[in-house]
Length: 136
Image: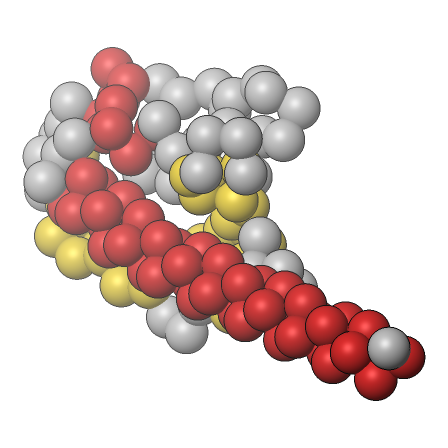
């Protein structure tokens, strides 16, 4: 009888570990997809879509001057070595290099920004707990 209990406990632990790994892999895949979509939103001028990712854990959002963004054309967005920050794969650091063109001044600029991403388990979506890129 004792041996059956040990085998049952071992099987439960094995299943639990496998489920955790699958969830972590899914979160990692979701992060990759979110980073790609976020970069595409910036690149193609869908600033309100990119802004939808910017929600702090307390529910607040950074302030953004969308009027200023009317003259900005992003020419390149590159995520540089995103890093998962915890075992649960619910926090990540994503450095970005963003090149953009300001039509008012005919200038090309580059900014580097490190963003802190977090996974909201309730809505099953990644968000950014950093300011919106300062494209000015």
